[in-house]
Length: 308
Image (cartoon, rainbow, N blue to C red):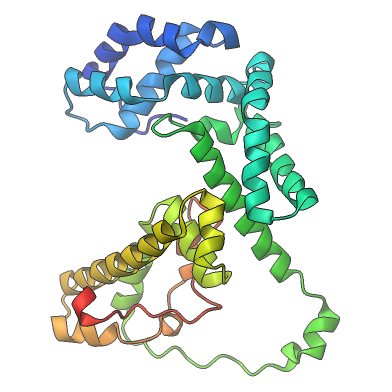
């Protein structure tokens, strides 16, 4: 992972001040991660999440909250260190399998799902001379185990979607798909503002939020199934889905008003089915995430007035 903005003097100073302590605490020496490389990782992570004009004290506080040992292990694995990879497998292979079993609910499918991630996590390909590993995107802001559960759940949803698309030509013919009537023109083609604002609101979601929405609305997963994917309680997912629906409605409404629509006009526009919009919702939800969009289950942007 590389920072997209210059490393500030405050971040550099905080990293230099804490480097000896954090390097020892992280166990970098045991997994072959050099101090200079570890310092660069800390600078990149801090620069990614801290404001450009932040203070050294703020940077120090941030660095001390990181899961420093897990961050070092993940990045050493991403760099191709075999001792780090062996330690990773010792600590997380069984946990990864147990998470996969909660998702797939069948032993062979669970092991296949978990095993499918190892090459991607280890990094078997290179790009511009650099190793490509998903572990390079772990930043240590949460637990590595939780991050792995999210990655696993995303892969499960992605696999499910790919499987659903593998329908034979014969099956399509039997179902009359070859002779299906063309889709009617979208109802809101006249107003591109709603489409662009909706697109932007969906694209602003985090990877996990996209995965949850895609699993619930596109793939028809139940709240309980999604909860098992992420290792949380069903009520947590229920609250998340409800909160996301309300938040999206507010964002879309505010965006249309900012683009010059009257509030009543914007509210009336939100009374339609999302599927009637000329919005590539699938693409928006797929950004930085394998999740798809709201297309196979009826989804409405509209919520009750009191929830807005």
